[in-house]
Amino acid sequence: MIAKSNHLQLPKGYTVDLPVEELPAQKVLFVPLTNGRCPKGELTIKEGDKVNFCQEIGVRHGPFFDQPIFAPCSGTFVGMEKHGYRNGKVLDYLKFENDMQDTMDPSVRVRSDEEIESLTQEQLVELLKHYSAVGLGGSSFPTYIKMQTKEKINTILIDGVECEPYVTADHRALQERCDDVIKAMMILQRIFGTKDARICIKKKHSELLDPFKKALANHPDCGVTMQLLGSYYPQGWEVAMIEKATGIKVKPGTLPAKYGILNFNVSSMIQMWNIVKYGIPVMSREINVNGDEIVSPKTLKVRIGTPFSALIEACGGYKNPDASKILIVGGAMMGSTIPSDDCITTRTVTSIVVNDKKEYKEEPCVRCGSCVLSCPAHLHPVTVMMVMKTMPVDKQKIKALHPERCMLCGLCSYSCTSKIHLTDYMRRAQVIAKLP
Ligand code: SF4
Ligand code: SF4
Image 1: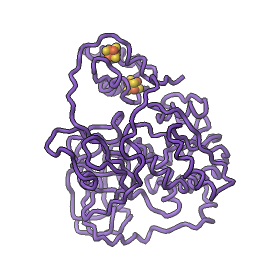
Image 2: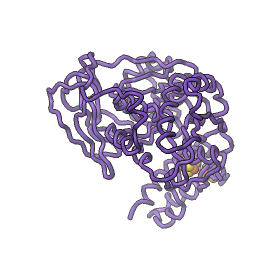
Image 3: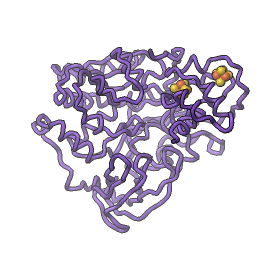
Image 4: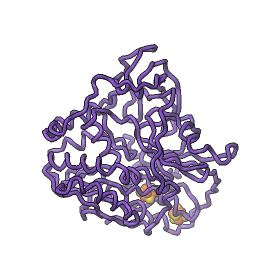
């Protein structure tokens, strides 16, 4: 059973009730040549070439799959530059001067309803592969891999729980694009022969029922429902959401399809609809810019390739520009800190949180057990920490503590009486457990 993590409820931040604002595309946009899953990149264009919006311009190679690269605007490829990536590393980026015309590549075409209704599973898998669709909740897991399952699918679950504090992008997307989410779900229902299709949200966000009912009125016979789940963290964790919604416990490391379940997050469904209907990869997305240090927190619809500094400027900038601050990409609990706002928006960036930098001094462990009680994966963070502190680290002992089951939710660090960064120990233990 999934522990309820003391039913921790975290604040949603400042943007939950604000409509999405569109940030106009910038004069200069960037695309990474490589990324965390695909460490090699190859281009089919050269410096000075003109490109069309959504034109395929190269490919990233990974150990298990390739990702085509698409131009983020029409204009000119002017060369390479180094900038930060969402995981804190510095990468090589392709730099484009935007001609502000958005001249669409001729390969892009809108599909008719009849074409969509006759799409097979194989054709959908090929489309998702070609447009390099990935999980947009931050996981970047290739969507086509989930979609090519041969298992009998009994339930389709869309994760609209989004439990991280401050993050409200999917919440806003459900308010404003619920119809597209339902249309994408209907494609899956037909292809997999699945009647049971649900959008899962937190009980405390029952205001999402209204836009859902409104969108559902356009598709009265589709059978899509909305399911209200508990309002605690980390209810949005895939394993926790599936267990709460269906009672089925998914073994860590296995795909939910093995249990007859297909699950995606809200933004990934919107991405799928855009690919199938309009033939375009993810070229913009909703991103929260939030936190105590932002003058006017907002949810912005942003062109992929936009520097973070432009997003922060669109939100009025920093309250205290000279004060030291902490920048987090992807949520205050599970996100990564980045050294500066010289970082570029990619499709898996869900949020930027900027808070003032409080220095926490770690104290010795008082054996209170709070970290063990709070862990939704039933792990022993304190024991992992102690083994990690004993040099040389005993790899077998670490393996026996199963750090691979940790989803890095941050609850152990959050609940630690002595302010020990237990999640960091778990992260490092995961690396050690993978060593041969
Ligand atoms: S970060 Fe890992 S060890 Fe810590 S509470 Fe979350 S799942 Fe458990
Ligand atoms: S919560 Fe912190 S102080 Fe308490 S047992 Fe765990 S590591 Fe030790």
